[in-house]
Length: 232
Image (cartoon, rainbow, N blue to C red):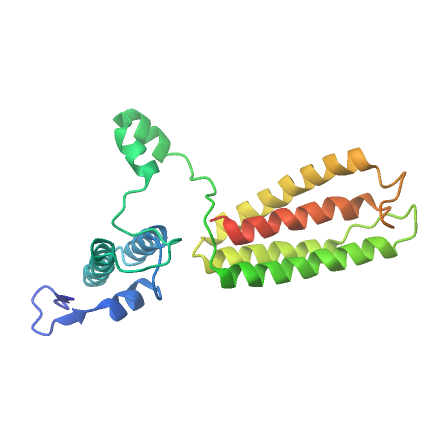
């Protein structure tokens, strides 16, 4: 627990406990170090011109960091998928060992997508939604007459929107979420196109599917599911 003054000459300090710290940083429950650091950075940027709010954010960050350290040092049982906030990631250790010019060059580049294990609830919801979209796309593909090809535009649009929404729930910025979603769709479409080029369902239908767009779209939806559930 930390006591922080409400202003530089304040006589009414506020108490920063874990509950308030989570509220200040927009978090809930036990979170990974990545989410904690991301929330801390976002709040500092949000209150860039407000010294009082920034002090509150720093206090909240310290409380959660200390709580994480206490759990680690006391051996308290925790979800083994959650990284403790006081553990320095291997990537950060490697970055610190680089010469200054290399660190500066790397800092100027936009960070690429990173894989992270999603909570079971997110995985279930994403799996159900994208599975339904994939099933509808498959049914439409089977129902098309042989020789007719029609891309499932609505299903792809819904999958793209769902991907952006799931990524926003993980506190990924809108622009980055949209870029990752479109990148995933392009990657999935390229893989799907390669598979279709090998199967050639337009010449030899597969399980009633003669539409190449169906095969490509299925891989696109699968790629979007991976992005929605595992990337940030």
